[in-house]
Amino acid sequence: MDSTADRIITAAEALFYEHGLRSVGVEAIAERAGVTKRTLYNHFDSKDALIAAYLQARDSATLDRYRSWLGDPALPLTERITHLFAALADHAARPRWRGCGFTRAAVELAGQPGHPAVQMAARHKTRFVDWLEQEFRTAGASDPARLAAHIALLVEGAIARMLIHGDTACALSAAEAAVTLVIADRTAAPRREARAPEYTEE
Image 1 (cartoon, rainbow, N blue to C red):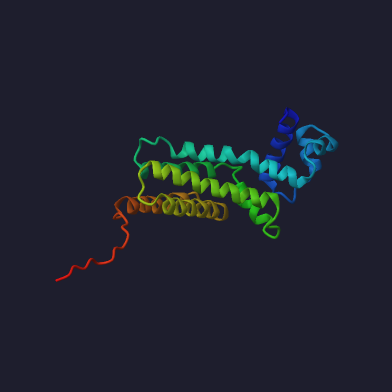
Image 2 (cartoon, helix red, strand yellow):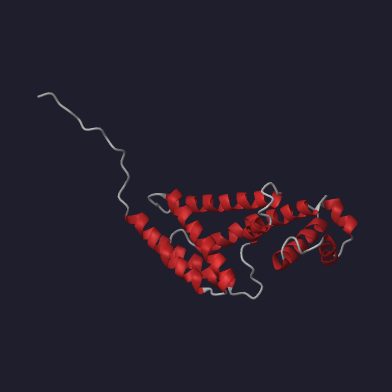
């Protein structure tokens, strides 16, 4: 991707995240990027294509941010999870924070399930859970898939409540619940397949 396309995506990211997808026109994006509308459409054939590109650009960067928040794999998982939610709370305290761009895109376009932005949001959320599962498996979790699904729900819930109420303590409450889940997973008895009783002849 050339520098002009990068500038357009950077401009779109700032405006879409700040104001939403529908309220931002391509004229504003082109102006912020310092290009003409014609140039913008030479790189992205529609606004929908630009929206998808904006979310694609956020995908790996968002996962990298959470990876840094989870921190050192050598540390206890309870400590790492606590740090992740504390970092999320700090991130949400920034004046320009507007929640998760992927969730907001999916909500804003909920009436268009086939929209590329909705599909991109779904892929990102799946990648997030898959990443958590791998982290928990490496950390020796008893049921990493189940734990990842539950922690992801706590992350989503914390973000939603912080966005609605403006209270970063929601993330700290979610951290307490997440730590409880990690401890419960760690102390869970190994699952064993049920075996039919053995009979011997008298």
